[in-house]
Length: 264
Image (cartoon, rainbow, N blue to C red):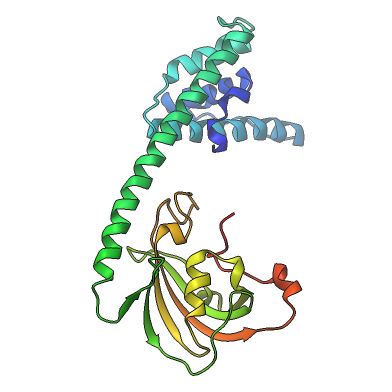
């Protein structure tokens, strides 16, 4: 659950501060009427109000995206009554109503996430089916798809080895979410500490080769939302295997890892 849903823990005065700012926006006086901020204490007081107001403003915008639209005039009224100690709701009722709002937002968020995950799953299955028909594409028993872009002459790594690679990761629509090329240097990581699609795929490679992997969601992050990687996403990686380290395995925990790091 994202922080902006946790309205239940926000004191009533927080809503009040937001309402004050929104009232100014509605009357278009926010840019015309400015308070003088001379001392540090004055700036600190203003900073508190501004920070809280910004938080609540963005919270309400997020709620509107989910279909929860609150009456701003009532938010303003709640502020004015609260600041004058004339609130129409007692503390317990305020708590109950904020918890109900939090629950409603959470349920809508879960519904939206499931819809997105189902949509991505269907799109991913279609992409995998079409990609499997392309010349040069091979499919393993697990469903991993790979294409040899350049074949090397070195040895194959084992799952217990550490490898050094250059790579680029994208979604099926071409959106890039990670790239060692952009960072200007390859990375080294323990091969058994990454997502299953990487662990399996890189073992097919020889040093000096470059492969294109299309990794089904169940060999990647599944239905988890990884921010830059939506739930049930099929991932596309171009990987160059530069070297294999068969040295001290005890140091695996220190290996740098790409965004294909293992799901827990």
